[in-house]
Every structure is written in structure tokens, then in C-alpha cells.
Length: 517
Image (cartoon, rainbow, N blue to C red; front, side, top):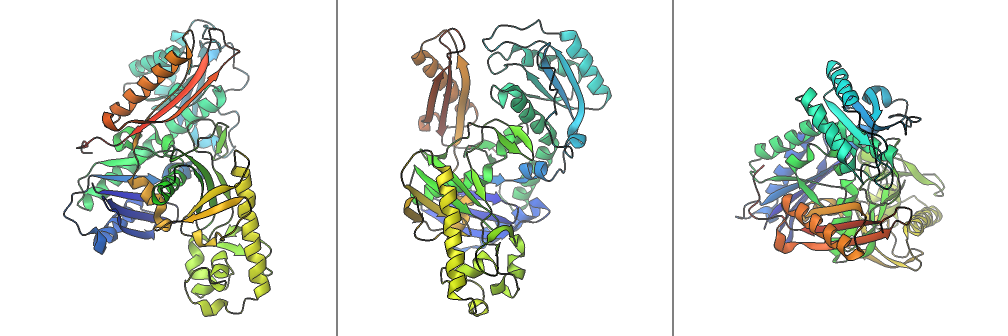
């Protein structure tokens, strides 16, 4: 088994080759404006490494990218979309896009249509679905040239009939339409679920261009292996399956790092800190996977609630700027300019990396350029870093007591050997490319998150498990390797019929031989 894992970040593109003996080769290169060009460069350098010399064929290539979430944050390459909400006469007071940032709405808002239909919280219908209104809305959106439409219906995660019927009517009226149904992405809350569907719809053209560029980069590198993209939950999906759901790749960077930390440390349950050039990201591993967030997550100023890891980011990284007296660090950062403006590299700005070099924590650049830093400044700066890390760890904890912390990322040397609230700090080989390692080892998942009524608890869980396993196999997992990594059921006392919400997730290895991309 040989796999290549690639993590395309905002500053660096990391790549590793993993075989049966572990990590065989690893490289870190700069991300380029032409994202495919950066991947080709990383692949070329990776395959030149001595450890990459092998007669084994590459079984698969896994890429993790922040390209899609960066597009939302930076307001670029987004397409206008149509919003179709099914819920009148309820839910009319806050129409779609109500809580979006003012600078984002003009880029994304194509048309908004609200029609009668939807269901109550207990599955009862509110009013009959207005199919004629949906057909009129479809024709209006077709006339306006809209081809990407998000459909959201009240309580559709309980009863999805209206969204599915709307999709059918839209396909009849707009043959080349791409429809995002909210019940397939988000959870119960209408506004957050609708926002996820709208973000997904506006990213679909970019997703197609980006993934096609990834595939072209692989072919140009002489690699014929199938391509997978990593997702928010630390698993992968075949590239063709991501065209329709780019939002599932939003947080793949941090989750890749956490999965890589679990693989390199051999620890399934621990806290992880990934220290980059600008930020430190904290998360918690449960059964080797990132713990998911149950609360709303803002993306580019848009409130969402869907499958995302529970993360905390603080402004501490290798490029963080340090004040002259050492008492203040970040959030301003030199970022990729560290190699030009950091003192150890010939610049004049004092960074967290300069402090680490002067304190003897790492050997980088020209240490003589920071020999003038006083012991007092070094003490204050390192104490401030430790305090920032300790506070973030305390905020990330879900239970009392000290934790085990796995430190990864290119700036992991900033993590001191002792931190309040931590009883063990684990440092691992290849920590600087843990994100690419996490991509390379990723598996395929199947997940079910739905509400069951009128059945026993055991029946609900068994049904959800079967559905999750079927989904994983349909997506390419080998049935014999499936493992259950999460089961959660919550009784919903406000809904009649012994209702309960059941979340189940299973993972399995990619079936072999995988289908070519």
C-alpha cells in the first residue's frame, strides 16, 4: 500500500508518501496562486526524495485543501444562487440571507422565493406544498440565468418530502440545474441549515474547477491513481463526490492535522495543538477522530450548523510578532514573510520563532542575529506563550483534570515542555507535515444523523447503523473493515412517539482496487 497525502494550506503545500513501513518521504513547499502548479511542484519534489524510491504503484492520492473556505472568507470566485424556502405561512419574518454580512450578499444573492409547505417539529404537515409556486419560481430563476439553487424546507431533516419534490420540479423546469437540498447537509435549525445550503450552492462552480485542476496536476505528474479529497470529519470522499458538496471540505486542514497527530503518536484520545505560522488550532481526539461541534459555527460571517470539528484558534504561530519587551505576542503575524522579515533570516521584526531560536528551543536561520535578546525578554515572551496555550487548553477541555497534549505543525517548537493543565506533552516525528500524513491515512465514512419516532431505542440505533454502513460501502469503503466510531442518541421529550435523535458514524478502509478517477 502506497499513498500520497497532500495538504494545500494558505502558505505551504505539504506532501508525504506513506507505505507499509510508515512515512517514506515528506516535503514542504510554498502554495502558489496557481494551486495546481503548487501541487505539481510538491509531487515532483516528493518523488525525488530518496525514501520515495519504490517499485510500488501509488494506490491513491488524498488532498486536503482550504481553498473553498478561503473563497468564502475572501469573497472571491462565488456564483449567484437562487434561494427557495418552503415554509409559508411560517418562517416569513427572516427571509434567506437575512443575517449575512453586507459585503457578501451582493455577490451571492441571485433570487429569493418563499412558498407554502413544510412540516412541524413532530412531522405533521403545516400546509400543502404549493407546487405551482415552485414551478413559477423555477421559471423566474431560469430566466435570470441561475443554475445553482439551494432548497430549504421547515424541519426537512425530519421529513424531506417537500425538498425532494422541489428538486424534481426544478429539474423539470431547468434541465442543467444543480440543486442543493438542505436536509442533506445541515441539522434541525432552519436558518443555519439554509445558510449551509446557500454556501454550498455558491461554491459548486469553483469546486468543479478546483477538483479538475487537481486531477490535471496528478496526470501531469504521471500519477494515474484515483483522487480523494479530505473532509471535515477526518475522512475522505472520491473527488467526483465532492463536486456537489464542497462545504464538507471546509475544515479539512485542521482535521488532517488531528488525524495525523493520532497516527504519528498512536493515541486515540488526546488533545491536539497544531501550531502554524499565524495561529495555533486546538481540538480533541475521540477514538482517533476530531470531536464534532454541536454549536453553530460562523464561516466568513455566516452562521452555520453542520458537520464541523470543534476547534479553537488563537493568534500564536511561528510568525507571530513579539513586542519589544516580550509581554505581547500576536495576533499580528509575519506569515509567509517570516523568511524575509524575521530577525534570524536577516529582517528586523522580532517574531515568536526568533524567541524560540534565542532560547535554544530550535535551530533555524542565523542564531547570532538574536544573541542580543536579554534573558528577561526571553523569559517574559516564553511565559506569555505558555499562558496563551494554557488558557486555550482550558477553554477546549470538556471535562475536569489535566490532559495529554500532542503538539504538531511547523511551529510545534513553540510549545514548552510544561503547561498548566497538561500532564504529558507528546512530540512526534514528522510533526511539521502531520496534516499531509492525516490526509494520506484517511478512511471513508458513513454517517447518519436523524430523528426516529415510534420505534424502540435499540431499533432506532440498529437502523441508523445499517444506514451508515450502507452509505460508507456505497461511497467506496471495504465492508470487512468497517468500524463504528460514534453512537449518540438523545431522547426528544418535546416530540411525541418516543422520539430520539440518533447519530452514528462508521469508517472503513478504501476498497481495493479503487476505481480510477
